[in-house]
Length: 158
Image (cartoon, rainbow, N blue to C red; front, side, top):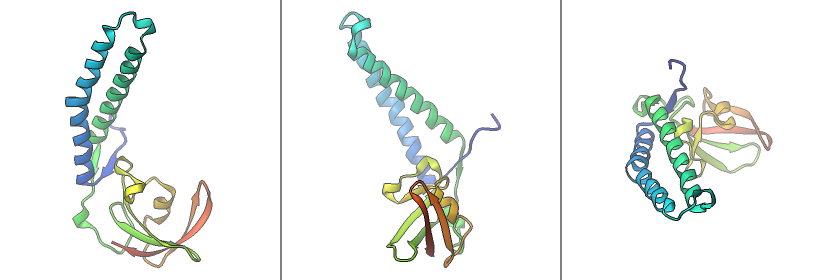
């Protein structure tokens, strides 16, 4: 297991995963087991949509539990207090503009386990984050996205 993927994340991101894992193990798992028990009482399992649905939910919950356990076990905590604001790296918040006339956008670069673009957190594996990591304020960077190439300029790092 020495080759398991590591998951860089903040302490808050790890806590969020631990909370989700706890919820799945203590509440959701029991709910699904109860649904399966009730659905069995409906009779013939070969034509029982409630039973099939409950079993699918059980498979999803167990898969998610396994994924979360792996992510937590292989978490690498980013020390946010040990950051300088002179270079883009995991854990920094970057503000940039699309050249020549785009609006300012800001994102915090986090590990894939806690990425949520709608909340302003992008994965370090995303094309835009990959292109900015290691860069400094004032750097112009070309980013290859699924929608085509764009150029951005880094205006601040916090």
